[in-house]
Length: 233
Ligand SMILES: NC(=O)c1ccc[n+]([C@@H]2O[C@H](COP(=O)([O-])OP(=O)(O)OC[C@H]3O[C@@H](n4cnc5c(N)ncnc54)[C@H](OP(=O)(O)O)[C@@H]3O)[C@@H](O)[C@H]2O)c1
Image 1 (tube, rainbow, N blue to C red):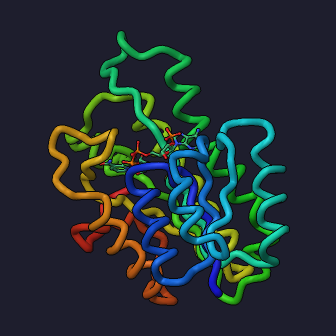
Image 2 (image 1 turned 90 degrees about the vertical axis):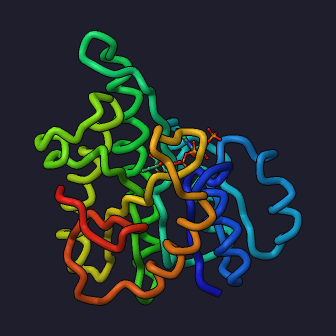
């Protein structure tokens, strides 16, 4: 049974990914801060769904991930770094250093820690993949072209995550681990933008199929899932 770890699986895109992977008979490790938000799913899929309870910015997350993975699998086929949040205060005056730190910790440091932690398990999979869920707002080129939204904390955090993706893509390809950045679309979730138009279950279904069919020679790109195109970094 193939295995996937999905961070931020308690709601939104992550929860829809959790459902799709389970439905397609994968063994799933959903990482959530509150287990009760997915308790019904866990009890319906007792032999397939093994939750990891924790916050990706916390000190103990490494141990929690390793303990659950070690108990149920020696390998991990896919890691989806999906957990994320936003603070919608715009402009320099309205942004604090703490906002910058908080969002960087979730979108970049948290992703870094998750990847480093599961590396031994990815190494044991035949064709391992890491998918970092990024955003159009993390594109420096879009912002430079006047298409930004001045949400410093989120945009800087996602841009940092994009650099992490690019470095990892280069380093880990030598050990056969593929790393990708995906903008999932304008989703109708709790952090929806004003122009949101896509139910998360539609994006999750599309992402599931995209991940299963990534061409071997795909370059390191910021892939725009719903438009099947590429966004400039
Ligand atoms: N919505 C969009 O239009 C859009 C567009 C581009 C990119 N994205 C990205 O897509 C991803 C999913 O977002 P979404 O729209 O599905 O948002 P969402 O519905 O708010 O879900 C976010 C998930 O991340 C979890 N999370 C947040 N901080 C966490 C932490 N420190 N540790 C562990 N889990 C944490 C949340 O858990 P709790 O329930 O505990 O809060 C929740 O499960 C995010 O990375 C977001 O930046 C979204």
